[in-house]
Amino acid sequence: MESNPVQMIELLSLQENASGYQMAVCISRESARTDCVVELDEYTYKEMLAICPRSQGRIRLSSYTKWDPYRKLHYSHLSYKEGDMRYSLYFACSAAYIAELQRLKKGVNSETVGPEILSPAMKGWQPKLKNISKIRTGQHNRQIIVRLVAFSLFILIAVISTSDRLLGEEDDPLRLSVNAASSLYDHSEPKESPIQDQLQASTVVYLANQDEQSHPISISTAQAAVIDEEQLYERYELDGDKAAYALPKGYVALTFDDGPSAYTEKIVDILKEQNVAATFLFIGKNTQKYPDAVTYASDRMMSVGNHSWDHSNLEQLERAAKVENVGFATKAIEKLTKQANTIFRPPYGLISDSLIEDLQKENMKVLMWNRDPEDWKAASSEAIIQYFHKVDPSGGIYVLHEKKKTVEALPAIIKYLKEQDLKFVIFE
Image (tube, rainbow, N blue to C red; front, top):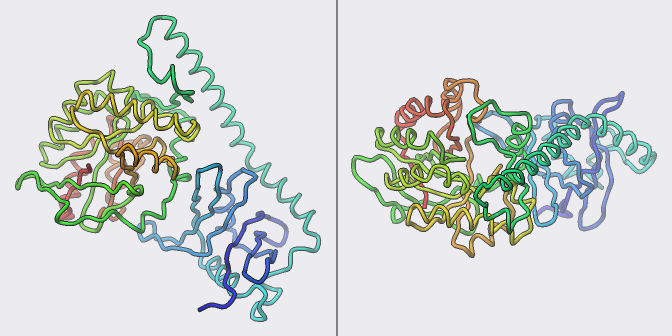
């Protein structure tokens, strides 16, 4: 057993100066805490700087790295908490960084590591922190501007929503009971705005508890119910104790977010023609616009789940309001399908431990994903298809959206997955 092991590595700051790139860290062991400056290569420094949170909270640096076989790169992560939300922010790193990290774990307060690797950071430390603060502030001005634009757009949407009610629009139940940060998501087909790009990008950066990908949901023969010998899919029951991110090797799942829409029935028809099925995560508010699409999918043996009432960021709401938002969508979906709705996928992939716990009490299970073609912003259907050819589909839960280009790409996607001899999965 390692003597005096590292208990925590806290990231204090990042710095670029004439001599290169550095990070300041505080290493906590049973015996002592030590502040150090560690040299970084440019690649890892820029990767870390790009995802560093702007909060004033403590930021922990993982002491481990992993290999991504799909993108063929090493990565690690930072973690921090805001309230009951725990964020894991992933960044790619170099072999040089991995070597430094290993020396960092072994060498602090050890004669095996000299000052050329780790320099004591106490002398002259305060001026360095000020310089780093200036660097970070300057590099992130654009993101502040984007957030201001997003806030302005929110105000505009709120005004429009108020106007709709004055004009006699049917009351949205959440308007009366939830301080909804009303959806900034556009469910129509036009080109996505920069604001939508920012929200969609958060799916990658702020995907909570993504380490679950290394522990895929367990599937046993006893859980599987083959619908028909000619149909190439199985139903599997999710575990409600934690969010599901992955499948075992040999299985694959297609999931569709943000419906129902004008494309729902076409997607279902393509799936049925190919003797496969998919899981649809419907937005409660949209079921009022396309009620027939919901029943069409459910009646044809598709799995139907819940993607919140209005696709707002639930983590901006109070704890009770989050559950209420999901509950409104559940009732709307169950009214149409005549079946219990037990599957939930959070908008933008933002999920907290407390929400998982509260949903479990409502017999709801959280379904995430581990493959994202980003079809919502794809330039063409061919670009979506190419993504499937670039990654290993085995064990993948793909997140797709009800978009025209996705519909066009779907037959080729299914054909390719069949050629890989994979069993399709839908969830319950």
